[in-house]
Length: 206
Image 1 (cartoon, rainbow, N blue to C red):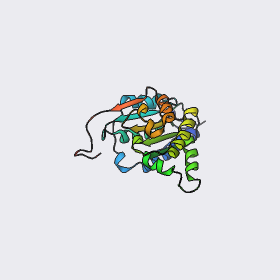
Image 2: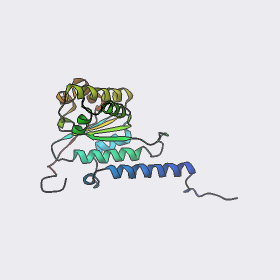
Image 3: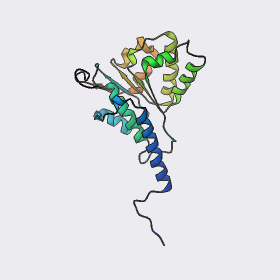
Image 4: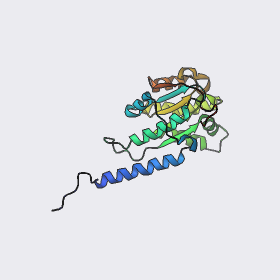
């Protein structure tokens, strides 16, 4: 009678391990080269990854303190955690990342027919949405309405977002509209992280 080692993986465990490896490698390939360098995540961010429970994350701070780099690494850590012990069977989690200026451009009313609406619906459903430098976008009534559609659905379904911004959620009304700013403040709750320090771009690589 043959016996198996305690370290031997079951077929399901082997499949999950392979699936995690494929997903993480795909995300690494999509990560801009400048944000692939290892960094330490703040303790509050690590706590968010460990027990986010549907809560969103808001990273704020001055120019060049590492908000975007931190967000990319947080997305990867979040993705890795979805394959950890005790996680329910969820398929492969989907992450979408956008700079705010590119997102607002894609949602504009003169975008190719149907593309803006299709994107809005997609971003309502993805497992994690990361929008970088939210206050940098120039809003219009149209884009604010599309942004409300995205955030309202994610708010209702408790689907998390990661935002980087140089102002706080309650100061975003001019960009996002007051309805989105209100929802975002509640979605993030206490998960608002202030990153401090010097501008990393001053004389060194970002």
